[in-house]
Length: 360
Ligand code: C2E
Ligand code: SIN
Ligand code: SIN
Ligand code: SIN
Ligand code: FE
Image 1 (cartoon, rainbow, N blue to C red):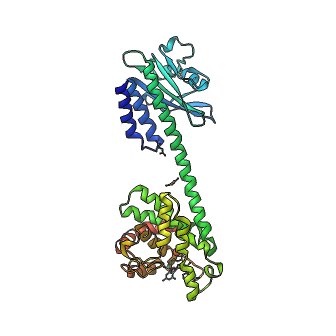
Image 2 (cartoon, rainbow, N blue to C red; image 1 turned 90 degrees about the vertical axis):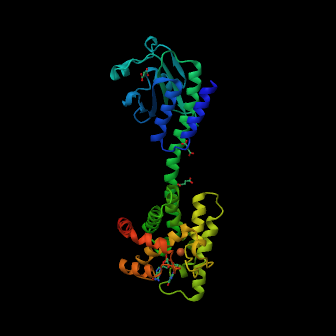
Image 3 (tube, rainbow, N blue to C red; image 1 turned 45 degrees about the horizontal axis):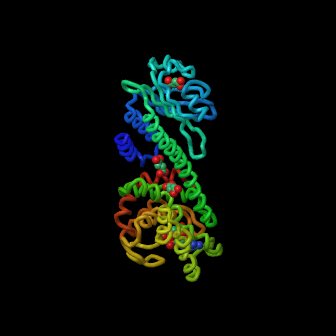
């Protein structure tokens, strides 16, 4: 038992980081098969709408659907009960139809219900035909450990995917809510996120960074929510006093975002604070320069300015792309990080595709 548990822990450790259920579930099925020394392993999930149990991982690679009202798998599902069946064909609950379909001869079976955190049965873990013998209680216990892991993982990866997409949308909607007054469109903030993601990828940052900046960059102007409309919506130049107020949108945004422990919001806080700093130290609010400005802010600035220049604002008409490009190139090493601006323009085709796809 000790050796098998050790093997289980080792192998489970290797797959603990996998969040994609399409990859995770086959890994768990392989794990069960090898530790139990079984011939086949299937993982059935319950589809409520159609009232069937279908295989996510099927023995022999054939997708199987069974009724929850029939067979050993159905019994384990309905009764929320683990079953160890030493001789399938002498058990009246066994449903030989699957064998008929697959041409496979089932001898013995372990079938375990997969139970989620709310005690709902979400599927069945099934292992068939112990190599050269019978399944033991120990096999059952080990499969129980794996199945707890399988249902947890399955549940958390489903939750994670749901959470992530809900979260994405919330962030985008909130960012938009903070900007809608000065007529920035929802597409403007989507574009800034996509452009920042693209540049980050081209600069070689990892996937997590790129996903984070895609959501964090759109929050850069969230502090504008605290700027009076008379200033924000003014059609024309701001006077010096108004300008001082406008500049505080950086610090206001930082204050809104800074207290969270969430990595994404911390990144967003740095971007809000630093997106008007300049490479040569002449920006605001603090006059930081060079690499003292976070790289996420240096990336966001370039996306923001390019998109602002080429879009309509209450105080200006859109510039043609060629003029925006020339203007920004001249500011390489002054307003913008020279390395990032170069990467940006090397990939202008893809930037313009984003502009086109999400135009106002
Ligand atoms: P925004 O409209 O989102 O512009 C973001 C940044 O894009 C600006 O940061 C600036 O770097 C660049 N940008 C946008 N339009 C122009 C332009 O016509 N010419 C040039 N040279 N650069 C441009 P900046 O300057 O720090 O401004 C921050 C925010 O302050 C702007 O965000 C906008 O909300 C506001 N703002 C700036 N200038 C004016 C203005 O003349 N009138 C009004 N009503 N608001 C202004
Ligand atoms: C897993 O799917 O095993 C990990 C889930 C998570 O950490 O979100
Ligand atoms: C059963 O559930 O009775 C058999 C299913 C199978 O052989 O896969
Ligand atoms: C979260 O923090 O809950 C999700 C983060 C992300 O979407 O990257
Ligand atoms: Fe800003």
